[in-house]
Amino acid sequence: MLVDKQFRFGVGLRAVRSPAVLAETARRLEGSGFDVLNVPDHLGAPAPFPALVAAAAATTTIRLGTYVLNACFYKPALLTRDIADVDLLSGGRLEVGLGAGYARKEFEAAELPFPSAARRIGYLEHVTTYVATHQPGVPILIAGHGDRLLTVAARHAGIIGLTGGQVAGADDPLAERISFVRAAAGEKFDALELNLAITAMPTDGSGIPDLSLTRRYAPTLSDAELLAMPSVLSGSPREMADRLRELRRRYGVSYFSVEQDHAAAFTEVIAALR
Image (cartoon, rainbow, N blue to C red; front, side, top):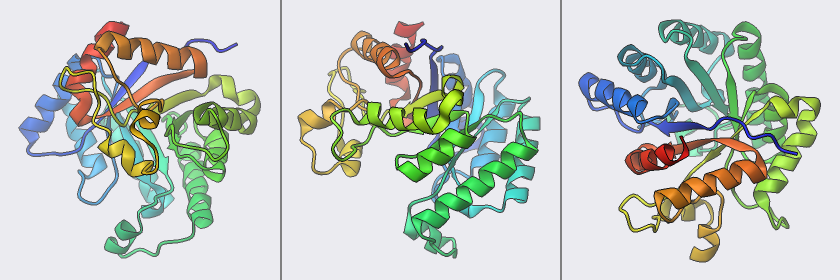
């Protein structure tokens, strides 16, 4: 039987226009009920650690996260040095999200080789093990979808980032992926926190989400199939809140992440859940 864990809500920061705007945005999101302010790790997006330090200086309670660092961009000792100082400067509020990287163009732009998926995941495990050994007090999230990556996540992370994507032959892909994590984690599973990235939700009061981002990852699915995905919310704030309660009850997912563009609308969902 699944035990309901406390809800947590993360929001991704996509742009930094000025120190003043970043500080105001961070304070507003903290005041809106978000638990974690996350920064991605893509060329063209804000540099994660400087943005998180600035956000930490402007806030007091919201946690600061990377969602997620491309492990292949970093050497473990140098990354751990940055993690240690950001955690110190934030008053112990840092959470480190890690992934294996997937965008060949970004590797090329960074003048780095693009290894095979197996080698990228192997390196992710190497980096994760090093960080966990040298900074054991910093929570680690690993996000992904495939068997190899989720095996690494189940063994080494305290937070598992799920995509809600399709799985060949599975009637309920999210349940199948969580079952896989459970088997890989063994006795550790009950202590894990499960995270799900919300890719679409209404932002204009219509109750109808913009499915364009979700469709990029599932181009062959119909609108009805996309709307049924656990990573897609629709309806009123109360209906979306009920949907999140159901996802927690049915799957054990308690940590949900949204994009910055969804933050204002999602604030109403948070209010309905607390």
